[in-house]
Image: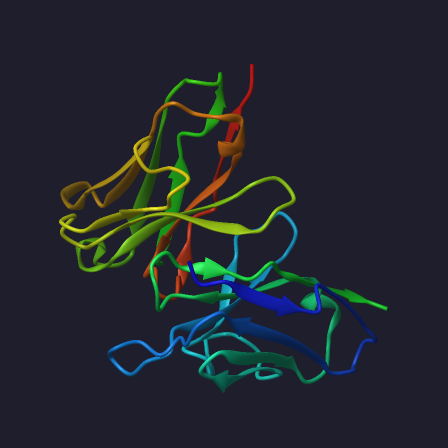
Length: 112
Length: 116
């Protein structure tokens, strides 16, 4: 299985400051159709995961533009330009290129 | 509104069985690949099973292969997961989700607890 490694696993951030989460895959996530199926999810306590970013850098409808995704091949990043209180959650990267899809361990974002 | 509603969870003894259901609405269910994902208490997310739109292609995680069976009824807009020979390590919240390559719609989850 493809191993997804996130860092850091815990991220204390001051309100209004930026935050960045790294995700590395154990093999390339470029699929045969040319797409890279790397997604980012937000999971608030007691809630289902919510997709924020799909195919590396595409923001889902309704997702604030302070969230952005970047990367290629095996190295990917989720950035929050200015953290707000509602961003407190666990963030997961996930690859859907290879079966089975696999998730990173999760990064807990909290307010410092 | 596009929606998935999970049901069927509960408390079951080791070795027992449960059947989870996922009711879809607001989209053309028969056109979509579907999947089950689970989350053990205080743990991360784990893929369980995949099914193609027609049901002709199915995959399972190694941890559930031979014990779980995924199926769908496109006429009823429903997805199922039959879970047999349940173990303590199957205790988790189970979510159905649409589009396994990048799940964009998730159910609210149903809790399965395997304990004597």
